[in-house]
Length: 511
Image (cartoon, rainbow, N blue to C red; front, top):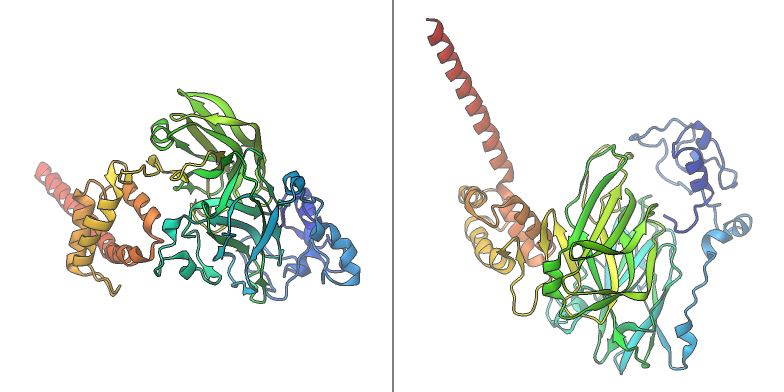
């Protein structure tokens, strides 16, 4: 859960070969009078991987002296809670017109689940034109806070209806990765004292910029405690002294991951192709910094800039990736990125700690493979260039329909496909109808778009969080079990028929 340097237990665990045994169990890593085993619910040092500890409640941390606010523990824990990095940003003190505003959650109950993404809409200063030049974290509960992302909202995100983010996220609300706004303007992650943006570019807020934002919190609660609350947030530093350029962030990543267990190295990759960047970039941009993102299986990764098929620059490389201690790569001078250039990212995972296949997902027990790139000048539709297997999702250019593998996403999902599901399947979720089953079979057999397993998978990934479409997907998949059973029965019948034929032929040959 911690960022930066490991605490005493983390160091001991690493020195012990990252193995839980009686040696580590009987040690008292944080010198608080309790063995590591007692603190983790294994007082007799008998736990093995996959088993449930003897004690599952009232646990404490073997690397943090507790109770942490006692006289005995305050001095010992000071390094853990105060941190060694002090946030410094010269731009904040360069002129007298730098202002700040703090945006944070009200005290909010943290659910007793391991991974939680909560969102809340916040209003940004709107009485003028400003550039957001820095931000610093406000961490209320360090036991659960993993990261914060603030997403700027375009005017079209503020629809005024039920889908308006100001309505959906008027209070802290469970949101997963569906923030409703897609423009990252700042954030915080473990190990970071804050963000200080370039003198060349910053994020526009106010009258001619983002007027609202959605603040997304990632809480990590592996102990499944129900007594935690949190009111963390960020302080935003902004100025009317505008930089020469408006900044933006785009993401390159792979949305399909399939990592088998027990592997020392497994590599996945993604690329923003030359055709995609040529379509999306109306002019050259300049990359200011790069960050790679994986979860706990992440081992190493890199990102390259390619031109005419040749690598011209490494945008970031991390040979010892740590989810809890992310590393950013600052480019000074900025790196020029031309229309037609390619961005390639590679993520290598170590799955030796897993006994089951790990897939893409929001939870920290699932995995991701992303590269984040801050750049200028901002391009309105440039937020993400993603892959699902080999299919590329390129940002929709003005006047063009969004396509996946040559299939129009708008036509496929919202019109023809949705209409078939609505008319043939039960939208109440009360089971499979014969008409629905036949429609699904026919679609999978004959539909060039939704019958393609990979295109179907990517379309679903892109739309399944949209509330208006959740019933569509639920209804379409209502016959999956029956279709699988039909397939099994059909296979069994085919095998039986084949055996009968072989038997007849055999006896005919010897008579």
